[in-house]
Amino acid sequence: MRKVSFFLLYIMLLTTVVHANGNTSNSTKPTRENILEDATLDLLQPQITSAIEDYYGTTFNIGFYCQKIISIKKLEHPGSMLIEAKLEGVTYKGAHNPIDIFTITVKKDQSTEGKWVMQEYKVKKFRKNEKYECRDPA
Image (tube, rainbow, N blue to C red; front, side):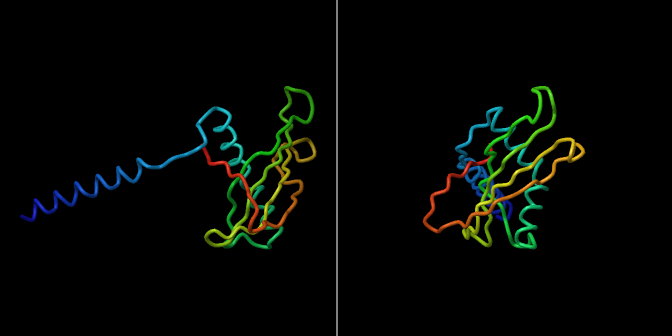
C-alpha cells in the first residue's frame, strides 16, 4: 500500500510540474536580434546598477525591469568597436510598485579606455495610469 501511494504521489507531482512549465508563454521570439539585445542588456547590467545606485543611493530592494535598448550606434567608422548605447527600463520597489523610468547612456571609446562606462542617465517619474510597453526577454 505504501509503494502504491508513493507511486501515485510521484505521478501527480510529475504531471503537475510538466503541466506548469508547459503553459509558459513569451511574446518575444528568440530571433537573432532579440537574443543579441538580451545579451547586450546582460553585459551592461553593471552600468545599469551604477545609475540606479547613483540616483537612489542604494540598490537594496530596488529592481529594474522592462529593459530595452532604445538606440545603439558606432561612434567612428563602421569597423570600429567604439559604441554608444541608450537603454531604458523601469525601477520598482516591492511587487507591482513601479517608481521611475530610467534612460541610461553607456559608452565604450578612447576616453573610457575601451571599457563600458555609464555616461549619463535621465529619470522620469512613473505615473500610475501610464501605459509602458514591456519587452519580454527572448
